[in-house]
Image 1 (spheres, rainbow, N blue to C red):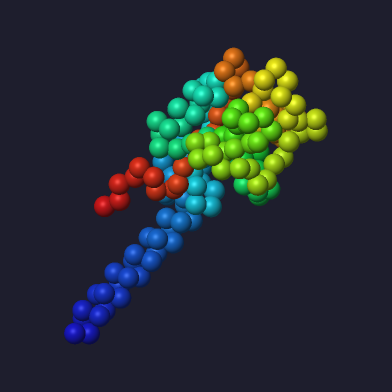
Image 2 (cartoon, helix red, strand yellow):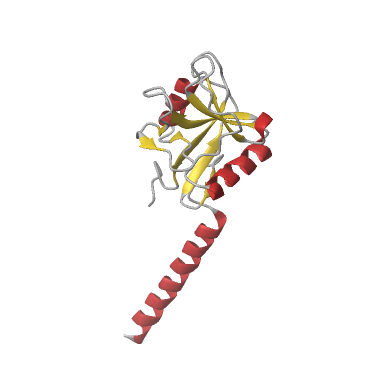
Length: 164
């Protein structure tokens, strides 16, 4: 009986060490994705218009990034600086109702914003959200279809992964 308890204890300790190392090394994000808290982020190398960027993220079981607070905004800013992506689509639009910004595809209203001074200005029907290097990575509204930019996809850390 004591041998079984000893073996069981050894297995529990081994699993605990593996779990701790997994958390510390960010093992739960796919290759090419960066972990922050319980999500994974990928900065595109290509440029797309906002709607195509949304579709590209969906193909990878993700969505255009949602930024809910200052800390996450700061993380995204530094992620963009390190990847040298200057102007990058975020996941919000106000195309349903001017001035009412919603995170897509879920339609959740923004509870945090970081717009550059004078933004959003809806110049020439600008309805999609961008993190803009020209404004120190503050937010700007931009035309959704005619312009292409890099984009950031966000997903849960274990989405689409098989554990076994």
